[in-house]
Length: 111
Image (cartoon, rainbow, N blue to C red; front, side):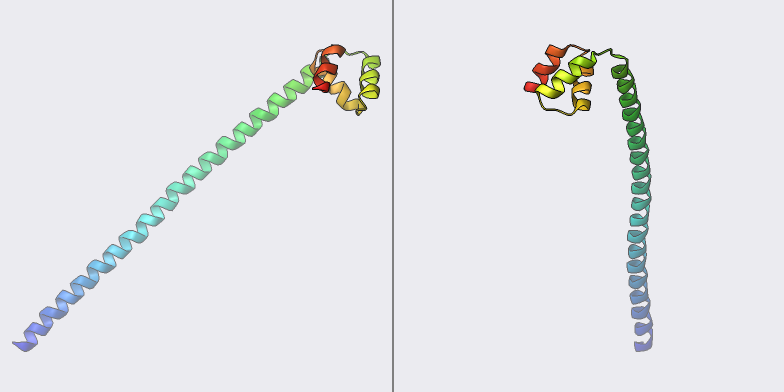
């Protein structure tokens, strides 16, 4: 009987080992599935960022076109640049943003 008991104990030990290995394998595959889901989410987020960046770029280009269409007086640019000691590009940009209104541009720059 002792030999039979040892075989039964070995089978139980093998069964427990198999269960532990099965649990370990399940944990491993769960992590792989989570990583795959995370990868998909990352790809979706990257696509959303790319489309958002493109939309921002298009909006900026449209705004630059609108500002370029604003007629400004070159004398106003010179006065603002000289009196406020600014670069002419900054003075011109500010003047365009204020639709050519020199007084509004100067008030904005003095804030």
